[in-house]
Image (tube, rainbow, N blue to C red):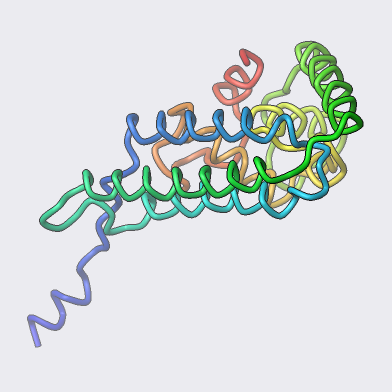
Length: 207
């Protein structure tokens, strides 16, 4: 009975795999994704491939966030190796499909216009200031500004699916992801996770 009671009170260990080093790997992978998909932002033929690329990175990072990651005889080194393989596999699959997509003169012109628009958007975003003390459930222009900065940071389209003006679950998830990458919080359950306090606002405004 005592053994059963002890087992019942055993706490689940936290992951050993989310570290400053793996957060840097995640930031690098996200930056590479944004660079890879940029030339194909207007290609309807690669919408699914881009989504699969993003999903591959999310899946790889989710594995590192699992409670028992880093435990066992192989430690976190094996988990990080697996992360690298998953990210590489997702990127190679996207690039293989991208190389097969015909590039017409019209597509080149669209890409050029898209690139110009992105540069303009980047310049415009420099004027956007993210306010502090933003929390889930809020709405308005301040939330739209937050969403624009987050979308640009993670290489997401500045469209109605990402800039809604409402601080919902999707925006909270991006805020937590940004906070983890920038070492503002230690985990998704840390105090302030998913909320834009002074530190998070300052980090966003420094981009």
